[in-house]
Image (cartoon, rainbow over the protein chains, first blue to last red):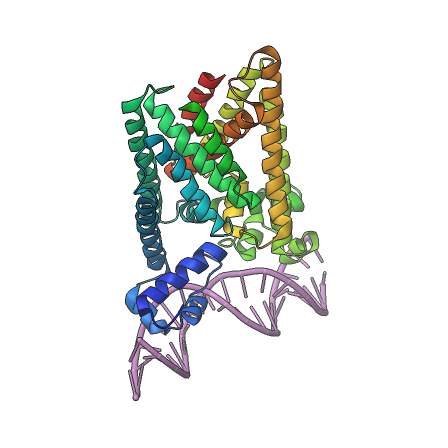
Amino acid sequence: MSRKNSVNERILGTASRLFYRQGFHATGINQIIAEADIAIGSLYKHYKSKNDLLCHYLEQQAKTYFANLEVYLQDEKKPLLKILKLIDYRIKLQDGAECLGCHFIKINAEMGRKDKRVEQLISRHKQHQRDFIERIIDEIGETQNLSMDKETLTNIVFLTIEGAVVSSSIHGNTDDLKSVKKFIEQIF
Amino acid sequence: MSRKNSVNERILGTASRLFYRQGFHATGINQIIAEADIAIGSLYKHYKSKNDLLCHYLEQQAKTYFANLEVYLQDEKKPLLKILKLIDYRIKLQDGAECLGCHFIKINAEMGRKDKRVEQLISRHKQHQRDFIERIIDEIGETQNLSMDKETLTNIVFLTIEGAVVSSSIHGNTDDLKSVKKFIEQIF
DNA sequence: GTCTATAAGGAGATAGAC
DNA sequence: GTCTATCTCCTTATAGAC
C-alpha cells in the first residue's frame, strides 16, 4: 500500500487484503508490516494485538459494505428493483474479489467461537444485512400482495444470497447469484 | 482418541475433530499426535504432509455424510418428505456439532484457492449434495406439477440450505434451517 | 510401530535507541 | 513515527536408534 496513505490506512488496508486473500491465521504480523511498509512498533501503537487488528478490519468492512451499497442503490426508487440490484451489488463485489466470498463468513469459519468480540461483530453485520432486506420487503408489501408471510420471505431472500455467495467462493463464479436473481423475480 | 482404535483411525479421528473445532491452520501437528497418542513418525508414515492429511479428512467426511444420510432416509418413500428429512438431517448434524457449520465450507473459507486438490474435493462434494437434491425433485416432479423449472428449484433448495447452515454457524442455533423447512413445505 | 534429536524457520509481542 | 534486537514459543518435517 502506497506511502501517500496514512500509517493507519496502510496497516488496515494491507491487513484487510491479506486476511481476505490468505486467511487470518495464514497471515503473519511480519508480512503485514512488510507489505504495508511500516515499523512493527507503529502497528502495536495502533492495535494492541493481532486480534484487535482483526476486529477493526471487520468493523471497517461492515461500514464500507453499507456505505457502498447505499451509493449503489441511491437512484433506485422501485423496491423490487432494489432487491435485484442488491444482488447485482453482491455479484459486483464477487467479480472484483476473485469470488473469494464474504469477509465475515470467512472469518467466522476460521475463528468459530474463539473470540466473543469477533463473534459479535459477525452476527451483528449479518443481522444488519437481514434487516436491510426486511425493510425493502416492507416497501414491496406496501405496493403489492406478498406470496408468503414477510418473515419467511425475508429469511429466504437473505439465506439464498448467503448460500449463493458461499457457492460463488467454492466454484469461482457467480452463476448461483444469478440463479437467485431469477428466483426472486419469480416469487414477487 | 482411544488406543483400541487403529493408529490410522486415531490420526484421522483426532485430526477431523481438531480441524473442525479449531480450524486447519490453528491446529498443529504436535497437538494431533499428542491427542491421538501416536508418534510423529507414524503420522508421516501414513500421510506425506499436513495438507495430505487434510485431503483424507475431507474424503472421509464426504463418505460419512452420504452414508449416514442414506441410513437416515432409508425408510422414507415419499419424495417431498425426503427433502424435509434431508433438512432434519442437517439440523441433527448441527445440533450434534455445536452448530459449527459445514466441514467443507469451513475449509474452503480458510484455504481459498491455495490447494487445487482441496478445492476439487470441496466443489465435488458440493456438486454431489446438489445432485442429491435434484434427484429428489425429479421424483417429486413425477407425482405433481412443480411450481417452477426444475433447475431453479434445485438451486434454491440447495442454496437456502447452504445459507441456513452458514447462518447456523454464525448464530449458534438452527432457527434458519427450520425456517427453510417451512419455506420448502410452501413451494411444493 | 515407538522414542528423541534436530533442522530451519516463523509466530506474536516487547523494549530501547534515534 | 523509525530502526534493530530479543524473548519465548511454536511450526512442519526429517533422520536415526530401538
